[in-house]
Length: 341
Image (cartoon, rainbow, N blue to C red; front, side, top):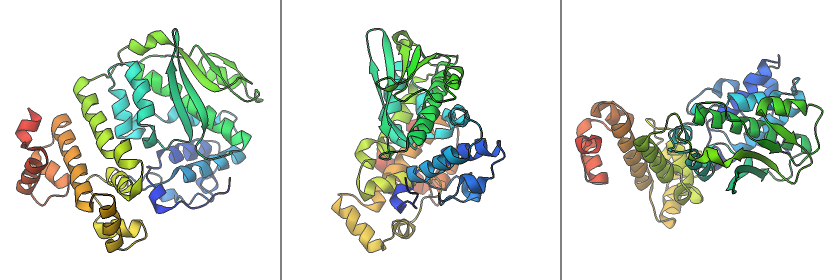
């Protein structure tokens, strides 16, 4: 796969996964410059909350890791340290699910929020439930890159399910569609189950009985609010296509510091007039998108935090609390006290 800089509209993910790769390789004595080679990601931006990267940049860093890593367990270690708390709203929505069945469902529904390198499906059978890793986002990855991505993904999935359940929750077994690598013994060590190679598909198989278990951090109100936020801000209807969808994603990553219309136009390499015309053709406007994002975040802050109205107004870019209250009434028909009660 040839590395290349992403288009502006592809840069929608915080670099937390890239940072995890760099950290694991650094522990092997590999300098960040080598890990990030040809990715277009600067070292000083790895922990910048406003930095945006793409799946292609992430895959370039993974290709570097395949080439220069000195530990065959590298991909497993990367997956192990990618905790759900690193995934923002997506991660917290999963952590607060009311059952493990809901976790499986939402993990797939909102997967586009997680810098996804591979496509994932889940199926429920009579006695088992299965994660299936169908193919890579990038077409025709090299065999070793595919193995690296799968090793990272299965380690990550096992880690996340353990965090959701609040206890060790290993699969019954795991299968892989490629021949056993020389480090095949590491698979069972990291996954905690028997592993089969040269199988029809890459999959993690669990006991179906886990689906009705209640996660340790389940919370009915929190999960409803976070799912609504995911649906409204980064759900399929608003972010699956078009310029408007890309703008939603940018706003999501900049709460408290929303880019202006001029800045947004520059991000997408166009003048403001063109941006306005493109959004009009999609049946929306820059202000409508911004208002929708502000409304969703306002309701989330009011219902899930103890921040006062002045602080929320400032965080959402209002000059004072009075303007925020008027806007909130226009968006929802309710005031702050009503939404908090």
